[in-house]
Image (cartoon, rainbow, N blue to C red; front, side, top):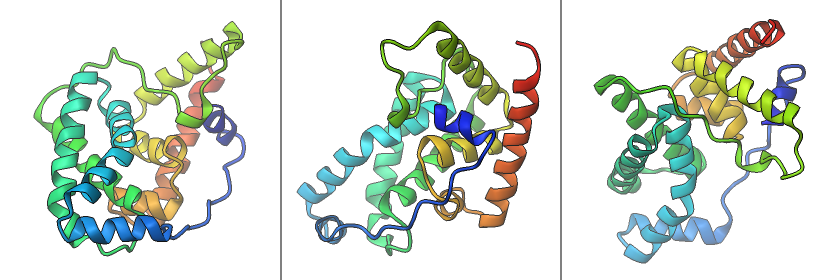
Length: 196
């Protein structure tokens, strides 16, 4: 979460594109050929990322579980078509994003659930009350963003995808992602500077 707060002042540099390790590439190839063990291992590696992402967009644990399961089904259906033009995680989050959009269209989502903290920025038990209040306020501000801006922020800062990876997951141009993130950060800065 502190990474996002820092981005309000200085956007982070782009992470370098990293090709999958040979073992992962081999596992993907086996899974594409129908190997059930390889498919199971890939889904096991991705399930927490998918659930956390779905929960951050849908804000309801039960709906997020349903979306995670639907993403897994679609992942398996479309895996033979995966060409490796993006990282598997990015490609999978693109599927999850589409599933979440469909869930939001089907029904109104209650907004009384919190967004999860970024996996790498969990507060320590010694965190002070001020930090907890800042996190709660930032969660509230994120919830108030337009859907597209919230999606871009979550992919970029919570899932730590590059601009290109975020664009691939959102199925849009990198320039669109940059503009959307800029607008989201501007909105967050304006709202953050107002008294709580």
